[in-house]
Each structure stands twice: as C-alpha cells, then as structure tokens.
Length: 248
Image (cartoon, rainbow, N blue to C red; front, top):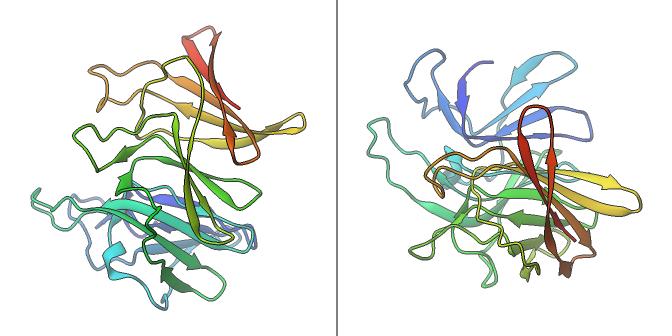
C-alpha cells in the first residue's frame, strides 16, 4: 500500500470488484507525518493486486482528509459519502469541522458531485453506520450529531437517505429496551428467511461510557422503509456474554 492510512472508509465496486478507499487520514508510510498531497481516493485492483489513483472531475476540496464517515456503493458503482470531519494540520491544533453534505463519486466516469444541503438533512454528523438497502434507501444509525450539548444520537432516531430522489427523512423506532447511544460501531446487511434483516454489530463507545463494554449485537428487522421496532435479545458463547437487539 503506497500510504499510511487510518479513519477512512472502503467500498467494493460490484462491477469489477475493485476496492475504493475514500477519505481518511493519509500518512507518509512508516511515519507519523500526514501527507496533505495525497489523493483522497485510492483504488485497489483485486485482479492485479495493484494500487492506483486517478483524476476525479469536480472533486470537492473540502472533502480532503474527510474521516469518521462510512460510505456505501450502489450496483451502478456510485459511492455515497455523508458528513464526517476533516484533519487539517500536523500540529494537534487541527480545526474540528463537522459536515452534513452528501458527496457522490461516479466510479464509471470518475466524476464527483456534492449535493445541495437539504433542509431535511441531519445536522453535521459523524461516527455513524450507513447501510444501503436494495430499495436504494441508505439507513444511518447511531453516531454523533453536532447540534446540541449531548450530540450522541439516539439509536431510536433513524436517518434515511433515498438515493432514488436524493431526499432525506427521519424515522423513529419503537421499543422499550432503553438501548443506549453508540458511536464508532459497525454494521452489515443480511437476509434471513423472507424478510430483509439489518444486523448491527456494535459496542458501547468510550465517548459515551466510562469503560468499554463487551461486544454487543444489534439486529434490525426492517419492514419496508416506514416501520422500525427495536427489541433486546441475549446470547452467550464460551468467551463472553453478548447482547442482541432486534429492530423490525
């Protein structure tokens, strides 16, 4: 790999299986020196085991060093990246700017577009999970919204972006289990039986709790795009106890 890399996001292109590294903090290899001249997108050719960069038409310079994001890619090779923050210097005095813009990278034509910020878009947002459903809806859960003194986002407040018409909406999940907020967690999408199932593997964050909790599982059943319900389950393996939450 030609750079040192941290806090970025990656997507696998379904068209040719190439891997895109998007955003992140990039360093001169084997040093603690950030490389501000590094491109914001790297491409790994999985067939040739080769890293490359490319010129991107219309790239938004404010996306440079953008991190604390999670991008998703659709079947057409369009990468959607929302919000996040950026890293602007090497001194530890970097300004902390959090964004709520949606950027789209068309990996076929290597064009970049940043959508106008909708009045329905979430506030500046980072450290969430983003999961693309087959319907073209991107589901954002957890993370931090920089809009109040207590920015940790409720797990019951679900942000959705419709990639078909570039519209935002907020859904409120029902449930009585008092599931705490999470940041810096991860998620995968699975399908069990005939229902689409959103499985979220999560841990409590040190930002929210004084001590780091054991690994937790959040499991979301999503019926359509309008109804969410979250409940709790518990499972135990030989090493530790794990919590599972179901949103349906």
